[in-house]
Length: 145
Ligand SMILES: [Zn+2]
Image 1 (cartoon, helix red, strand yellow):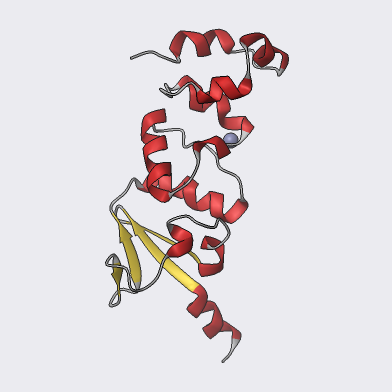
Image 2 (cartoon, helix red, strand yellow):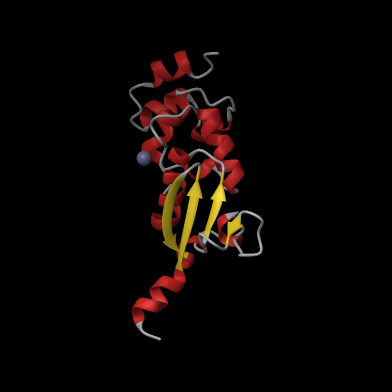
């Protein structure tokens, strides 16, 4: 077996909401005990003719999910709201608390209904001391209906 064939065998196609994402099986094993780390061809959503898995989920959020497997860093997609992001992460078996610090403000500003992140970050003075100059915006909008 040459290297090119090995490469093809290790590749996996994930069709999420009609958008095909391609990666390596090894990449999906990087985050254990998640939906993607446990993929097997016995699953009902595996299509042996197309040789791909189909998930009827948000393709935009999935791009960030897959990037998390590739890089080990979870960033917030800019075009979705907090609850949608959380719901998608839950489906993929991922933890929203893994969002990178650079995206914390985006994540909380758009209306994350849970207070867990604020609790983890601490008080508003602590946020200010961490350099969050937009705390005022955060408190105004965090629980906006
Ligand atoms: Zn980020």
